[in-house]
Amino acid sequence: MRSRVSILGTGRMGSALARAFLKQGHETSVWNRTKSKCQPLAALGAQVASSVQDAVAAADIIVVNVNDYVTSDALLREDGVTKALHGKLLVQLTSGTPKQAKETAEWAGQNGIQYLDGAIMATPNFIGEPECTILYSGSSDLFEKYKPVLLALGGNALHVGSDVGHASALDSALLVVMWGAMFGMLQGVAICEAEELRLDAYASYLKPILPQVNGWVIDTVKRIEDCRFAGDEATLATVDSHYGALRHLLELCRERGIHQAVPNAFDQLFKAAINAGHAQDDFAVLSKFMREQSPTSPRE
Ligand code: NAP
Image 1 (tube, rainbow, N blue to C red):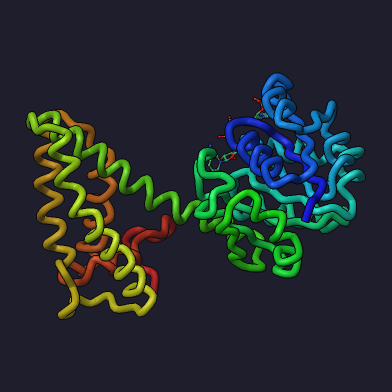
Image 2 (cartoon, protein in one colour):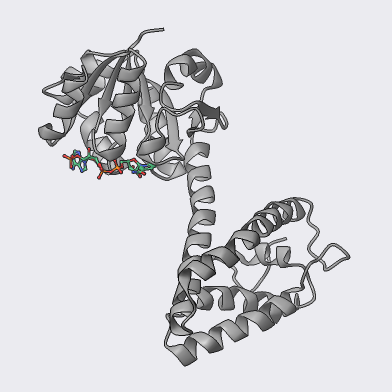
Protein backbone atom coordinates (compact mmCIF):
# COMPACT_ATOMS: atom_id res chain seq x y z
CA MET A 1 0.00 0.00 0.00
CA ARG A 2 1.59 3.23 -1.24
CA SER A 3 0.87 6.22 0.99
CA ARG A 4 1.63 9.91 1.11
CA VAL A 5 3.86 10.54 4.12
CA SER A 6 5.71 13.56 5.46
CA ILE A 7 8.57 13.66 7.93
CA LEU A 8 9.05 16.78 10.02
CA GLY A 9 12.65 16.78 11.19
CA THR A 10 15.40 15.11 9.21
CA GLY A 11 18.17 14.85 11.76
CA ARG A 12 19.95 11.51 12.19
CA MET A 13 16.79 9.62 13.06
CA GLY A 14 14.33 11.56 10.88
CA SER A 15 16.54 11.00 7.81
CA ALA A 16 16.59 7.25 8.53
CA LEU A 17 12.78 7.26 8.81
CA ALA A 18 12.48 9.11 5.49
CA ARG A 19 14.88 6.68 3.78
CA ALA A 20 12.83 3.73 5.06
CA PHE A 21 9.57 5.18 3.68
CA LEU A 22 11.25 5.93 0.34
CA LYS A 23 12.67 2.38 0.19
CA GLN A 24 9.13 0.98 0.50
CA GLY A 25 7.92 3.23 -2.33
CA HIS A 26 5.87 5.68 -0.27
CA GLU A 27 5.42 9.17 -1.65
CA THR A 28 7.62 10.98 0.86
CA SER A 29 7.90 14.69 1.67
CA VAL A 30 10.41 16.08 4.13
CA TRP A 31 10.85 19.30 6.06
CA ASN A 32 13.77 20.32 8.22
CA ARG A 33 14.82 23.58 9.83
CA THR A 34 18.30 23.21 8.32
CA LYS A 35 17.46 22.68 4.68
CA SER A 36 20.82 21.13 3.71
CA LYS A 37 19.88 17.95 5.64
CA CYS A 38 17.01 17.36 3.17
CA GLN A 39 19.29 17.25 0.15
CA PRO A 40 20.48 13.62 0.44
CA LEU A 41 16.81 12.63 0.81
CA ALA A 42 15.81 14.66 -2.27
CA ALA A 43 18.46 12.69 -4.16
CA LEU A 44 16.61 9.51 -3.12
CA GLY A 45 13.28 10.87 -4.39
CA ALA A 46 11.85 12.84 -1.46
CA GLN A 47 9.94 16.05 -2.06
CA VAL A 48 11.44 18.89 -0.01
CA ALA A 49 8.70 21.08 1.48
CA SER A 50 9.48 24.75 1.94
CA SER A 51 7.35 25.05 5.10
CA VAL A 52 5.88 22.80 7.79
CA GLN A 53 2.41 23.65 6.47
CA ASP A 54 3.37 22.58 2.93
CA ALA A 55 4.80 19.31 4.29
CA VAL A 56 1.56 18.62 6.17
CA ALA A 57 -0.57 19.50 3.14
CA ALA A 58 1.43 17.08 0.96
CA ALA A 59 0.64 13.96 3.02
CA ASP A 60 -2.02 11.93 4.83
CA ILE A 61 0.41 10.61 7.45
CA ILE A 62 2.71 13.09 9.19
CA VAL A 63 5.61 11.75 11.25
CA VAL A 64 7.35 14.14 13.64
CA ASN A 65 10.90 13.44 14.76
CA VAL A 66 12.61 16.46 16.25
CA ASN A 67 14.74 16.94 19.36
CA ASP A 68 11.87 17.36 21.85
CA TYR A 69 8.16 18.13 22.34
CA VAL A 70 8.84 21.83 22.91
CA THR A 71 10.14 22.07 19.34
CA SER A 72 7.35 19.82 18.09
CA ASP A 73 4.69 21.99 19.78
CA ALA A 74 6.18 25.13 18.27
CA LEU A 75 6.00 23.57 14.81
CA LEU A 76 2.53 21.99 15.05
CA ARG A 77 0.57 24.47 17.19
CA GLU A 78 0.72 27.16 14.58
CA ASP A 79 -2.72 28.01 13.15
CA GLY A 80 -2.10 27.12 9.50
CA VAL A 81 -0.30 23.89 10.41
CA THR A 82 -2.97 22.79 12.92
CA LYS A 83 -5.72 23.38 10.33
CA ALA A 84 -3.75 21.49 7.66
CA LEU A 85 -3.43 18.52 10.04
CA HIS A 86 -7.22 18.22 10.44
CA GLY A 87 -8.42 14.69 9.56
CA LYS A 88 -4.88 13.37 9.04
CA LEU A 89 -2.76 10.95 11.07
CA LEU A 90 -0.03 12.51 13.20
CA VAL A 91 2.62 10.05 14.45
CA GLN A 92 4.82 11.54 17.14
CA LEU A 93 8.18 9.74 17.18
CA THR A 94 9.99 12.44 19.13
CA SER A 95 11.14 11.14 22.53
CA GLY A 96 9.25 12.58 25.49
CA THR A 97 7.38 11.86 28.70
CA PRO A 98 3.97 10.17 29.10
CA LYS A 99 2.54 13.53 30.21
CA GLN A 100 3.76 15.23 27.02
CA ALA A 101 2.25 12.42 24.93
CA LYS A 102 -1.11 12.82 26.71
CA GLU A 103 -1.09 16.60 26.29
CA THR A 104 -0.32 16.25 22.59
CA ALA A 105 -3.08 13.65 22.17
CA GLU A 106 -5.54 15.96 23.91
CA TRP A 107 -4.56 18.88 21.65
CA ALA A 108 -4.84 16.60 18.59
CA GLY A 109 -8.30 15.44 19.67
CA GLN A 110 -9.48 19.03 20.11
CA ASN A 111 -8.32 19.81 16.56
CA GLY A 112 -9.72 16.75 14.76
CA ILE A 113 -6.27 15.21 14.25
CA GLN A 114 -5.79 11.42 14.51
CA TYR A 115 -2.87 10.71 16.84
CA LEU A 116 -0.44 7.91 17.66
CA ASP A 117 2.52 8.37 19.98
CA GLY A 118 5.59 6.25 19.45
CA ALA A 119 8.97 5.38 20.91
CA ILE A 120 11.80 4.18 18.71
CA MET A 121 13.76 1.43 20.45
CA ALA A 122 16.58 1.43 17.91
CA THR A 123 19.39 3.52 16.48
CA PRO A 124 19.07 5.02 12.97
CA ASN A 125 21.05 2.16 11.33
CA PHE A 126 18.30 -0.33 12.36
CA ILE A 127 15.38 1.70 11.01
CA GLY A 128 13.49 -0.29 8.37
CA GLU A 129 15.05 -3.59 9.46
CA PRO A 130 12.77 -6.54 10.35
CA GLU A 131 14.04 -6.63 13.97
CA CYS A 132 13.66 -2.86 14.52
CA THR A 133 11.26 -2.29 17.44
CA ILE A 134 9.02 0.77 17.52
CA LEU A 135 6.41 1.02 20.28
CA TYR A 136 3.12 2.77 19.53
CA SER A 137 0.36 3.82 21.91
CA GLY A 138 -3.08 5.32 21.38
CA SER A 139 -6.12 3.93 19.58
CA SER A 140 -5.58 0.27 18.58
CA ASP A 141 -7.98 0.70 15.63
CA LEU A 142 -5.84 3.57 14.35
CA PHE A 143 -2.68 1.53 14.84
CA GLU A 144 -4.11 -1.50 13.00
CA LYS A 145 -5.36 0.69 10.15
CA TYR A 146 -1.95 2.27 9.56
CA LYS A 147 0.27 -0.63 10.61
CA PRO A 148 1.02 -1.68 7.00
CA VAL A 149 2.58 1.76 6.41
CA LEU A 150 4.29 1.97 9.82
CA LEU A 151 5.96 -1.41 9.20
CA ALA A 152 8.20 0.37 6.69
CA LEU A 153 9.98 1.98 9.67
CA GLY A 154 10.58 -1.21 11.60
CA GLY A 155 9.39 -4.79 11.27
CA ASN A 156 8.63 -5.09 14.98
CA ALA A 157 5.91 -2.41 15.23
CA LEU A 158 4.16 -3.04 18.56
CA HIS A 159 0.96 -1.51 19.92
CA VAL A 160 1.60 -1.23 23.67
CA GLY A 161 -1.75 0.13 24.82
CA SER A 162 -4.58 2.56 24.32
CA ASP A 163 -3.12 4.80 27.05
CA VAL A 164 -1.24 7.17 24.76
CA GLY A 165 1.52 7.71 27.36
CA HIS A 166 2.55 4.06 27.48
CA ALA A 167 5.03 4.15 24.58
CA SER A 168 6.98 6.98 26.27
CA ALA A 169 6.71 5.29 29.67
CA LEU A 170 8.15 2.06 28.27
CA ASP A 171 10.85 4.01 26.44
CA SER A 172 12.17 5.32 29.77
CA ALA A 173 11.58 2.00 31.59
CA LEU A 174 13.63 0.13 28.96
CA LEU A 175 16.38 2.72 28.41
CA VAL A 176 17.12 2.88 32.14
CA VAL A 177 18.01 -0.84 32.09
CA MET A 178 20.38 -0.23 29.19
CA TRP A 179 22.06 2.69 30.98
CA GLY A 180 22.23 0.66 34.20
CA ALA A 181 24.31 -1.93 32.35
CA MET A 182 26.36 0.67 30.47
CA PHE A 183 27.25 2.75 33.55
CA GLY A 184 28.03 -0.47 35.41
CA MET A 185 30.40 -1.37 32.59
CA LEU A 186 32.09 2.07 32.81
CA GLN A 187 32.64 1.54 36.56
CA GLY A 188 34.14 -1.86 35.75
CA VAL A 189 36.44 -0.38 33.13
CA ALA A 190 37.63 2.25 35.63
CA ILE A 191 38.45 -0.53 38.13
CA CYS A 192 40.31 -2.55 35.49
CA GLU A 193 42.34 0.49 34.45
CA ALA A 194 43.18 1.35 38.07
CA GLU A 195 44.17 -2.25 38.83
CA GLU A 196 46.02 -2.73 35.49
CA LEU A 197 43.69 -5.40 34.12
CA ARG A 198 43.49 -5.67 30.33
CA LEU A 199 40.17 -4.51 28.87
CA ASP A 200 40.03 -7.34 26.31
CA ALA A 201 40.24 -9.77 29.26
CA TYR A 202 37.48 -7.82 31.07
CA ALA A 203 35.26 -8.13 27.98
CA SER A 204 35.87 -11.87 27.85
CA TYR A 205 34.90 -12.27 31.55
CA LEU A 206 31.77 -10.17 31.03
CA LYS A 207 30.49 -12.43 28.26
CA PRO A 208 29.42 -15.43 30.40
CA ILE A 209 28.13 -13.13 33.18
CA LEU A 210 25.75 -11.04 31.08
CA PRO A 211 23.28 -13.85 30.19
CA GLN A 212 23.06 -14.68 33.93
CA VAL A 213 22.31 -11.03 34.71
CA ASN A 214 19.63 -10.96 31.98
CA GLY A 215 17.95 -14.00 33.53
CA TRP A 216 18.11 -12.49 37.02
CA VAL A 217 16.58 -9.21 35.78
CA ILE A 218 13.58 -10.98 34.26
CA ASP A 219 13.14 -13.32 37.28
CA THR A 220 13.18 -10.34 39.64
CA VAL A 221 10.50 -8.47 37.68
CA LYS A 222 8.32 -11.58 38.08
CA ARG A 223 9.14 -11.77 41.78
CA ILE A 224 8.14 -8.13 42.29
CA GLU A 225 4.92 -8.73 40.34
CA ASP A 226 4.18 -11.67 42.66
CA CYS A 227 5.10 -9.62 45.78
CA ARG A 228 7.60 -12.29 46.89
CA PHE A 229 9.89 -9.93 48.79
CA ALA A 230 10.96 -12.10 51.75
CA GLY A 231 14.12 -14.16 51.31
CA ASP A 232 13.21 -17.76 50.38
CA GLU A 233 14.74 -20.88 48.81
CA ALA A 234 14.79 -19.14 45.38
CA THR A 235 16.64 -16.08 46.73
CA LEU A 236 20.14 -16.04 45.24
CA ALA A 237 21.56 -13.56 47.77
CA THR A 238 19.92 -11.47 50.49
CA VAL A 239 20.01 -7.67 50.57
CA ASP A 240 22.65 -7.92 53.32
CA SER A 241 24.83 -10.20 51.23
CA HIS A 242 24.66 -7.83 48.23
CA TYR A 243 25.45 -4.89 50.48
CA GLY A 244 28.61 -6.58 51.79
CA ALA A 245 29.90 -6.81 48.21
CA LEU A 246 28.92 -3.21 47.49
CA ARG A 247 30.97 -2.03 50.48
CA HIS A 248 34.08 -3.60 48.87
CA LEU A 249 33.33 -1.77 45.63
CA LEU A 250 32.95 1.56 47.48
CA GLU A 251 36.20 0.98 49.38
CA LEU A 252 38.10 0.10 46.19
CA CYS A 253 36.73 3.24 44.47
CA ARG A 254 37.77 5.43 47.39
CA GLU A 255 41.29 3.91 47.50
CA ARG A 256 41.78 4.31 43.76
CA GLY A 257 40.12 7.69 43.27
CA ILE A 258 37.37 6.25 41.05
CA HIS A 259 34.14 8.23 40.72
CA GLN A 260 31.56 7.00 43.26
CA ALA A 261 28.36 8.46 41.78
CA VAL A 262 27.12 5.09 40.51
CA PRO A 263 27.94 2.94 43.61
CA ASN A 264 26.74 5.79 45.89
CA ALA A 265 23.28 5.54 44.26
CA PHE A 266 23.23 1.79 45.02
CA ASP A 267 24.49 2.50 48.56
CA GLN A 268 21.63 4.93 49.23
CA LEU A 269 18.99 2.41 48.14
CA PHE A 270 20.54 -0.55 49.99
CA LYS A 271 20.78 1.53 53.19
CA ALA A 272 17.14 2.59 52.91
CA ALA A 273 16.05 -1.06 52.74
CA ILE A 274 18.42 -2.26 55.49
CA ASN A 275 17.42 0.61 57.84
CA ALA A 276 13.79 -0.38 57.31
CA GLY A 277 14.55 -3.94 58.43
CA HIS A 278 14.87 -5.76 55.08
CA ALA A 279 18.46 -7.04 55.36
CA GLN A 280 17.39 -10.69 55.05
CA ASP A 281 14.91 -10.12 52.22
CA ASP A 282 15.32 -10.76 48.51
CA PHE A 283 16.81 -8.07 46.23
CA ALA A 284 13.25 -7.62 44.93
CA VAL A 285 12.36 -5.75 48.15
CA LEU A 286 14.43 -2.77 46.93
CA SER A 287 11.58 -2.07 44.49
CA LYS A 288 9.67 -0.71 47.49
CA PHE A 289 12.23 2.06 47.91
CA MET A 290 12.21 3.53 44.41
CA ARG A 291 9.62 6.24 45.07
CA GLU A 292 11.14 9.65 45.78
CA GLN A 293 8.33 10.69 48.16
CA SER A 294 9.13 8.02 50.75
CA PRO A 295 12.70 6.72 50.40
CA THR A 296 12.74 5.31 53.93
CA SER A 297 9.16 4.09 54.23
CA PRO A 298 8.32 1.27 51.83
CA ARG A 299 5.42 1.31 49.40
CA GLU A 300 2.92 -1.44 50.20
P1 NAP B 1 19.36 15.06 15.78
O1 NAP B 1 20.14 14.40 14.71
O2 NAP B 1 20.06 16.05 16.65
O3 NAP B 1 18.10 15.76 15.11
C1 NAP B 1 17.31 16.68 15.81
C2 NAP B 1 16.24 17.20 14.89
O4 NAP B 1 15.48 18.18 15.61
C3 NAP B 1 16.81 17.91 13.65
O5 NAP B 1 15.93 17.71 12.58
C4 NAP B 1 16.81 19.37 14.12
O6 NAP B 1 16.78 20.31 13.07
C5 NAP B 1 15.49 19.39 14.86
N1 NAP B 1 15.41 20.56 15.73
C6 NAP B 1 16.09 20.80 16.87
N2 NAP B 1 15.76 22.01 17.39
C7 NAP B 1 14.85 22.54 16.53
C8 NAP B 1 14.11 23.74 16.50
N3 NAP B 1 14.23 24.66 17.48
N4 NAP B 1 13.27 23.98 15.48
C9 NAP B 1 13.11 23.05 14.49
N5 NAP B 1 13.77 21.87 14.45
C10 NAP B 1 14.64 21.62 15.47
O7 NAP B 1 18.71 14.01 16.78
P2 NAP B 1 18.19 12.54 16.47
O8 NAP B 1 19.19 11.57 17.01
O9 NAP B 1 17.77 12.44 15.06
O10 NAP B 1 16.93 12.46 17.46
C11 NAP B 1 15.65 12.94 17.08
C12 NAP B 1 14.61 12.31 17.99
O11 NAP B 1 14.65 10.88 17.85
C13 NAP B 1 14.85 12.62 19.47
O12 NAP B 1 13.64 12.81 20.14
C14 NAP B 1 15.54 11.35 19.96
O13 NAP B 1 15.36 11.14 21.35
C15 NAP B 1 14.81 10.29 19.12
N6 NAP B 1 15.57 9.04 19.03
C16 NAP B 1 16.83 9.06 18.53
C17 NAP B 1 17.53 7.86 18.48
C18 NAP B 1 18.95 7.81 17.93
O14 NAP B 1 19.59 6.74 18.06
N7 NAP B 1 19.45 8.86 17.28
C19 NAP B 1 16.94 6.66 18.96
C20 NAP B 1 15.65 6.69 19.45
C21 NAP B 1 14.96 7.90 19.48
P3 NAP B 1 18.19 20.90 12.53
O15 NAP B 1 18.72 19.86 11.60
O16 NAP B 1 17.78 22.16 11.85
O17 NAP B 1 19.07 21.13 13.72
